[in-house]
Amino acid sequence: MEKLISKFIRDTSGNFAMIVALASPVLMLMTAGAMDMARYRGSVDELQNIVDFAAIAGAREMVLANSEQSSIEAQVNNVVTSRMASKFGGKSFTKNIDVRMDDAEVYVSLSMQVNGVLGQNLFPDNGLVKADSTAIATASSKICAISLDPSQQGNAFHADGDTRLEALGCSIYTNSTHPNAADIGNGAELIADLLCVAGGIKSNGKKGATSFIDGCPQLEDPLKDRAAPKFLNGCNEVAMKIQQYASVILSPGVYCGGLEIENETNVKFLPGTYIIKDGPLLIKQEAIVKGDAVSFYFTGKDSYMKFEDLSEIEFSAPINGEMAGLLIMEDRTKSDVEDFDILTSGARKLLGTIYIPKGKLKIDTNSSVGQDSAFTVILANELHLHGNASLHLNSDYAATDVPVPEGVGPVGGSAYLKQ
Image: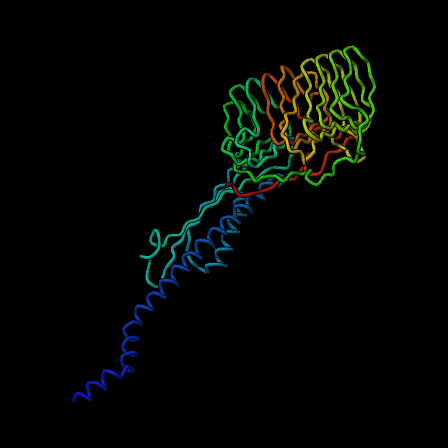
């Protein structure tokens, strides 16, 4: 008897079969649960893809000229119906399509029930899957200004006091993702087609018919590949200062240590490129400064510009050559960050593109700037308006032979998801 019992204990073949039989239901439940959760997560992702695609399709339809709300709704409905049929067969679902023409937005939401092998108890909301998306349409317009810095901690575009930025038929973009990327103070006024900000907008000012949109996609620097002007080592002038009351004609070249134009002078810049190296361009009070087909390139330490109050400025950019269309350009490789100041209301003509990829363009005057320019485009790390400044970013490109760099000026409409 003892031998029989001992033999039975040593015989494990039957035990394994018994263990498998007992464990099989548990293993099957675990497998079914994993499959259910995979189905649920897949449904969530697929539903989100469908509403994103449908919203973008509606916004793109909105960009088209003469698009009507009914045609946009029909387009979105067709996309939703076809994609739901393709991905989920005949499964029933609930949809909501809201075409907001005034806000240039298309909102789409979908919901449906996901059924699992084990029922709906494992799923959030008992298996009710929901997804929604909003897409924004931007009409074909012109880009007149971009504050470039994506990491600026607020006030990348700033206007205070009784300032006014007039960009009729143009759009203003801000790449900063900060909640206060654009700060428009009480009394300030913005007149433009669109203020499109990657981050947030803090506004107590007047916007009139200007559309304010936050959560915009960041714009890549359209001039990031634009080559710097070529110039020889050495200096044509060193720490040049034009004395008070003088009347002078200047030639293109390398101005080491900067260039200072004293009070009540009269200076004409001949056509060409002026390299302002290791020092500032200072135009002081009541100086009268003019130049057609000129450009200024700022490089090295302490290279910046300051147009003081009561000075009179009339500049236009070259129509051809390596600096075609560029009136002011800052060296991208500069290590220091400088303020480029326009403190005079006498800067009536700044025809061309102002490109300050490292520094801040600050306009602080008691009157208008740029009003006599056929067009002015500003690409700056930051753009600030103070005092009673009134900045005019005209966009009459056909009125001049000065070219507009690719990526600014006239651009096509677009559609993107609202973040």
